[in-house]
Length: 526
Picture (cartoon, rainbow, N blue to C red):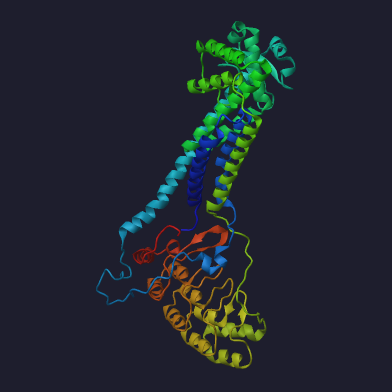
């Protein structure tokens, strides 16, 4: 099984989970400290939230090293020592499986169950995301309805005067649950009608300043993106916790701006509490796509505490600068850790480097390849004696030895080896002689090439290894012979499109899979 989309999704989800957990820890330890200014704290939390959502995309970046071009880098384990050989006369069932008899059913069940679980998890993720996005769309509709049914109030616009953001209006709403901002493209500050009729102008202006601060900070756009990301990652508790901290930091930052414009933190705290008390009798749920003043009891308590400290506690600007620098350093350290620790599913553009000799494309060379494929030993010997290189290589056909091995011509293979053909010479796109023979399940040719010194763990770009090709062919005896002669059952390569290929995930024959598992093959990459 290559890197299927469900495996890629599972990798992405695991990376997202630990990235967000690490960021939440950093936020708890550093970013939310009171030594930071409210404005800096809110934007650092916004950056942390964005990093938690985006950093798992690192899995889609190309690998730093094209693993399939460097055999030493792609090997996943040392070659297995030869242990057993499949023979028809073997009576010990624990030594090797008989061809056609299934073995290790528990391993096979586990191998089959894993993709089913991944598919089920992917379907659950998709269904949860669809539901969350539908809820978000419902919120957009509610916000649009509030915007459409509100009534402009010129006397409330006058309360803000020059502090009213450009292209923004204040409007009265009979259905809004509290002061809020709606409208991404034409923002409007909504004030519940009953609140506008009961609050003193000073308190009403303080609340309007808070909502105007949201508009100046573009909080409605940030909140919309935040809710969309939470809909996609609905299952991640750490991202939800980061979102809650970001919501609170956003409100505190706007409180601080409004208090500075109003002149006193205590006075603004009084206005905030008065407004909250006025909403208690007619409390309704907030529209999901709106920035509103109401929140949890603990969040309100923290906001009030922050406002009361504004008039008494003063942190030196140097302290705030140092803490801001520490937060930036912590986030940068997180980026370094995640970039280094996140696995990659992509591959870099390939620059092929092989040990092919210069190609001879003369008619004699083509005849040599054809003669080897047909098993015409006499013509092979005549052409080589006439000066055609025994290792001549034609793209698409390979060498004479590859052609003979591909077609199972054992006598021709023997003749070519006697004439000096290299048993490990590769041809990009055509593999090498051992890979060509293993791909077709020509066991006698495989045995002869191994006896001639062919490397059973040789990796050829785009053609993987002899054992991977033997497993793909479905011939158990060829697989067993290669393993008995040192082929590593867990040697895999990163192939085209970043796909991970190993003998086990390329085996289509259940008997080959059973045998590989018995010999130590595992489903996971290592």
